[in-house]
Amino acid sequence: MSSHLAYLILGSNLGNRSTNLENAKIKISALSETKILKASEIHKSPAYGPIEQPFFFNLALEVDTKFTPFEFLEHLQKIEKKLKRKKDSHMKPRTIDIDIVFFDDETIDTPLLKVPHYDWQNRDFFINPLKEINCQAQEFKNFNFD
Image 1 (cartoon, one colour):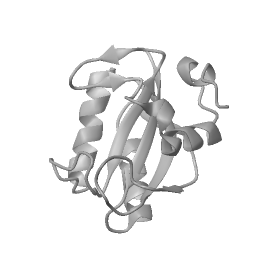
Image 2 (cartoon, helix red, strand yellow):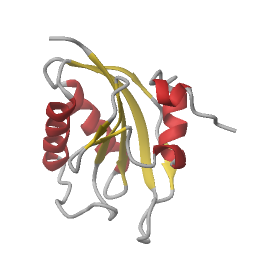
Image 3 (cartoon, helix red, strand yellow):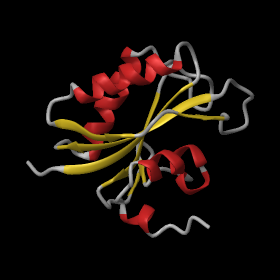
């Protein structure tokens, strides 16, 4: 089984945001065949999207995993569910949100998963934590930050 490099953004804007992020990190690191290589500090950011809601705490993770992108997504969604993310919480307040931003240098465009993550380049709460951990994804390295 080959190893893959994934970059994740975790976010929380309900409950104890720092604890929610820490619990998600613990559960990700407990996944078999998966290891967190780097983690950013927590960044505070306004909510993204059309709904007025509390600010988010976000952080980036660089992760080594042997899972395929879709297997990894399935495991991450189970973690979100365990941490009480509501099923209909897309673009609404939520206890935890785990996004796969990059997975190796793959491009995936399905209804279930989009990699690179949709609109990543317009989200400072993705860009700043990823810069902090020196994201090595090709699309990120080639992005003009000016």
